[in-house]
Image 1 (cartoon, rainbow, N blue to C red):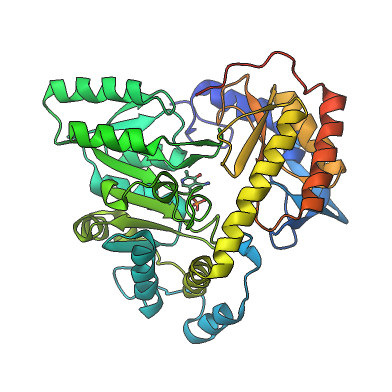
Image 2 (cartoon, rainbow, N blue to C red):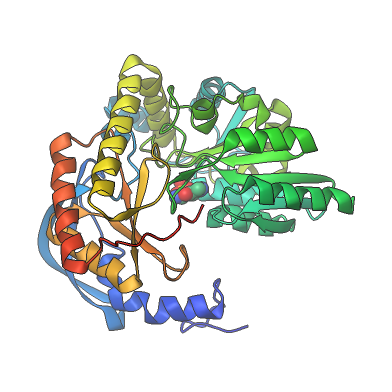
Length: 430
Ligand code: PMP
């Protein structure tokens, strides 16, 4: 295998490797930007000079307060009242010093699992210390070499790695294309050799800002006897009248989704992930997934932060946050679209990608917006097609109208400078 400069085998294919070595390196100042505040509606960036060629940085000592359109703080929970979390630190410390399946689980974990299951309306749940590992280490316990996995082309890398680790046969369907999914499922059934066929999708896709057409997927799953694994990293807390994610949004019974997965890094302002569903399935993940046996359990204060966030979501104040998020999403999207830039995604998605096409425009836009006091994230190849680089705006319930207006003015000025108002729009990717 090819080795990279440090002598390790790369995870990416040679072109991706080339891209990250020679292109990302030239625009390093747009990535890996350290902050020195909580990721709230505003965030403080630490200014630095970067020597992109040598991968080195030098902090200037200056700080820049920016309006934050880059973090996944959908419900504004990053600044939740810290008292109960501090109490959890006092009682349990920061770490469990043991894997979940040994001495790593305390009463807080049990309480959170029961509360998550109750919130989602399913029998059981299990929580882990990291969202990424929740997918990567649980999927091998649920799939196997005799399983056919049908995976959306835009699925997150943690899902892809999990399916690979499970040694399942993976076939990819076009993004949100239920007809294509049906073709692949019928072909798989005709082969007659799969123990089960599992559809793997996300709730909100973080590069496209699109929402899974869950009703159609569930109807197909029932018709053909498939199973469904749903990653709600970006939809839990952010979609649905009660914030219960895409099942809530599309009024689909949670019992119709075999595996509900989600992370606590976004709407909950914490860290970690969960798997929820039937008690039998959760037992399988507990027993056969690697996370419960080999990985450190979620840190107790983090468990407490998730519990506090959940409590807030379920209180009337939580409803106000969902409504504020939706109001901000609709306002921002509408104003952005009327500006003439190309915006992707579903009208209700809290992720709002703006297409800039080329990698260099992406880097330049991030730079110009930072100068205007707006912190954003640019995304490009290999996370997007090579010629569809974009800026990903993440809306929050914590943003005020004044902050959004200031951002829109900054975006308008960057769009004028860089020519981002395209008269011919590309066909949306979905
Ligand atoms: N699933 C999806 C769809 C994601 O977007 C992410 C990360 N953004 C993860 C899983 C991993 O979650 P975490 O960052 O909480 O580890």
